[in-house]
Image (cartoon, rainbow, N blue to C red; front, top):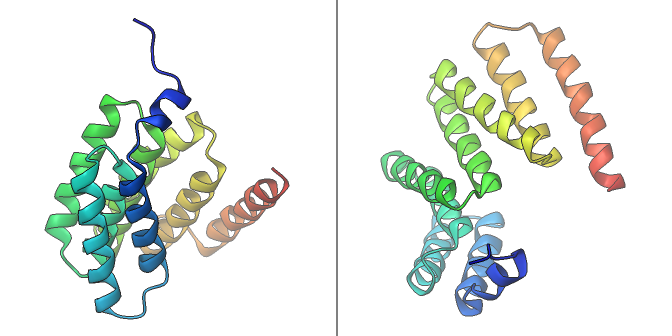
Length: 173
């Protein structure tokens, strides 16, 4: 009754499904129109139908829904992704999902809710030492706090200087 290792878990991933995820990610990261997003969503549907445990695919699907202004579906999906990720202690997915929700609420001008989600994501990212996510959360928080009238532009510049240092550290790793 031992806990599964990373290697054991990696072997459980359906490679065909993961290939669909990678294709969808590439398509979404490089989209130029709504048709590209629909193609990415179709690839993600195939991925998830083959392997319902690839949470990265569900997170990406949520991002595609935000891109097509289907926010209710995106929010519902991301809340479910967080719930599933909590069961598996997948803190990176939790942090990324919280960050996506934060971004959504900032875009809806619900600054406090967005800031709360970014802070939750930041806390988790610090615990798992995910410097990339830490830097992105700090950037989002800096902008959100300025737009919400909480911090000054000088404070945001100070935070961005810290972010530059973090990204330089990531280049060195």
